[in-house]
Amino acid sequence: MIPFDFEYYNPNTIQTAVDLYQHLQERGKRPLYYAGGTEIITFARANSIQPGAVIDLKSIPECNVLAMQKDMLIIGACVTLSALSGANPFPLLSAAAQGVADQTARNKITLGGNISGKIHYREAVLPLLLANSRMVTAGTHGIRVTSIHQVFNQQLRLAGGEFIVQVQIDRDYISLPFAYFKKREIGHVGYPLVTLAALRMNDEIRTAYSGVCAFPFRSAEIDEALNDSSLPLEARIELAISHLPAPLLDNVEGSPAYREFVLKQTMADAVHRLERR
Image (cartoon, rainbow, N blue to C red; front, top):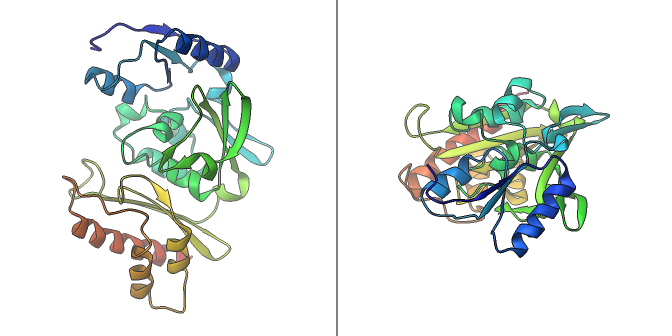
């Protein structure tokens, strides 16, 4: 149960949602956009957030698209992770979606919600970073299409009142050889120590990571090190580790030293799998 009252709105057009947000903000309602809502509900129950209004985006048709249009895969922000993995339009993204939480939660968690979340992991963003995806967003400026690398830096960074409408992925990326690893301390339960997503394109491996640092990331310097065939693999991995963008996480899942050990193993697994293809 959420221990406070709030107003609920269910617009069916992008413009109505944007106008509502602006109106509610002017009234001091601290509105939040709502897609799957799992994180909002969790934080609200813990009194970590207290929005005076929520704007549900699930009735907006553009936010529910899942289709190939010409040479572009279009995925609406309100498509659930279960629907995404079931349709399997981009196998690496499907693998990432299937690794999030459990089936019951994935029936609610949306692609847009996972990307926008505040927890460390947000694994669904990793394939989008590797595929140089484009984000379609809407706000008071109108609708814009932007490279994911311009709006995602440790977390999604949008203007006030702006929300994700869709993600666009070029067809060329969706059938590339890939690897996906999610390493936990014990079995298939709990948060991961390391999640690694990788694609091979033009004989080079691209990698992205979650659970390693306090945010998901892709690093050109790490990829350059892992692709340096003049070095033995162990040296390539040591060099790659030196380019981590932040300290290794230290939490109940594992210490930095143990996480580094697992990360090195996982990097080696990814290189072995993709270099053989």
